[in-house]
Length: 420
DNA sequence: TCTGGGGTCCTAGGACCC
DNA sequence: TCTGGGGTCCTAGGACCC
Image (cartoon, rainbow, N blue to C red; front, top):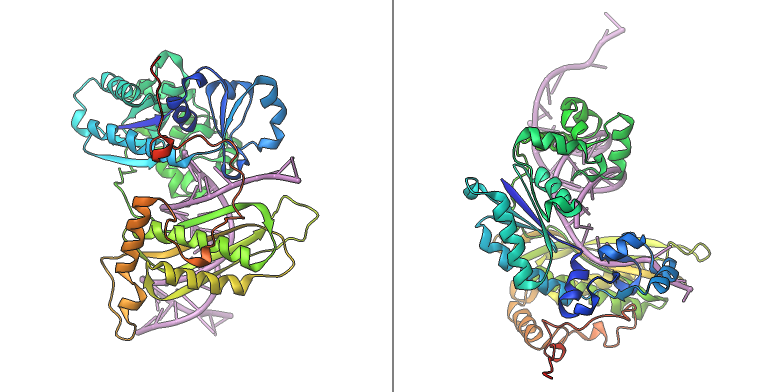
């Protein structure tokens, strides 16, 4: 058995932990650049705010209902996520961190227990420990645990905890789940499935898996088995990333090379930090730049380039050098750039590196220097020490007008409580 | 004026090997 | 008229996830 524990409206819930005045009010959290709505409280969902709505299209509705708006605060959400994970680990030795607000628990060892009761304990633990509301879905496969979570979250009768244990009960519930809510079925496939008269999770569970494999892929055929109760998708403990991407849209369009280079250098630096953090090397990197594709009048341009490093590396200097080279090759004058990014690719573990006879490894991967830089930045804050090419003004950075304090990760933001 | 930022896996087809 | 039978690796593109 698996449990899927999902934090409800996670970003909004994080804001509410430190500001109880937000309880019962419509609250939304915005994406980077304050561009889109990416998290909504239940009250905001009822008002009709949709995931991904551009903010500027919803200004009127926000004003009408006095909706509270926040920029995203990943210092806070990331740290709260780590705390949730710490507490959830108490409930099973086997787990998978699936996303910033979701975790699977392996419950093989607890199958004789009352799992509903266990689910309630989990929910209670997170509520008391962190004031984060969670939903718990339990099932014999990950896909069924996901669907159980759908009920736990959306049907008040379950009060946040639902199990799909016995097959007959499971099948009845599957009939009420629209096909597009099934884990692994997105927009394209749900449209195509509906044409085949497969409208619910139940219909998919009954479908001919050979036909599905032919017309879709082995992935969806696997989903059928999972819906029927045969577990195909294992619990994955932490796997290092195979790609590391850092990209941003700019607050203002960038025209000149120097500013664009500064932005790209910052992204590459961040990517290199992530790479070292997971103890890997990258063999190559990709750099991309693009104009604002929403703008119908400006000249459009978008390009990317992949470059190999002379030898696999986790060294910021090499990565910056390569990023700059690549940018020079794809940069075009007279264009208004709106977004850029870097991606480290061909990532390997730093434990399995072949030495090179002809390249001086100490020069390529100046490990001591990187360790010192990382340690200083860890202790005194991001970018305390940095490469000059990254600049210091961050003119490219976007709007973050309504960001809450980083209550749990920055000393000067720590919450102060006054006694009356 | 204003439209996010990450990831994964699978498949088909081409180039190559013997 | 007729033109083998295996393989591997790589890449781009398309689907999905949060």
